[in-house]
Length: 249
Image (cartoon, rainbow, N blue to C red):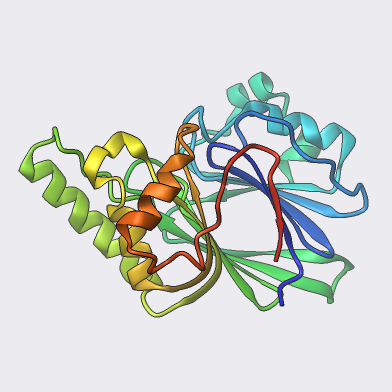
């Protein structure tokens, strides 16, 4: 039994509350739930698109100095952007830049050797930035960002074949893994191909709970997917219905 609370904030944004830390993932808009001030907060941003990245994340640090940032490398943090975003030198020390195919760790605890590590690996997005594969406290969490099989009925065969090759290459990183919680796109804009990326993920890894995201408010896409899958994945697909919805896992 997992000891984590998951709250859907909107679009691809989620808050995960663990015993000793919290993770804010790809928040762009919506009300962030109250977070225990004694807990370490890790803010993950998969890429720079406005529906995944809100510069207001940096305002959190003023009230919570125990906030750490894991930012995709396409979010260019330089002297100019530091001024624009209000990033102080103290805050900058708590920023880790995540590049595709990277691995690094953050420490959860009050002192050296006290606490657990958050082990983070990144995959290369098929659109922009990275996807996160995170291991913590014996569990594995995957947030796809915009890593998806972005094939479109209106695109050329060459484009779609190239997209599939790039996506399949990244899925090899997940082959055979057990993923406790996955956040993955189920985008209705892809019309009849909306399900391809989700299908591939669930066929590649053993996923225990998957939260569809990137649905642009069209939450009935989940019921559509379940019906199209003939109930095969009903037990693991979480019924995301509205911002603020929470699950205890």
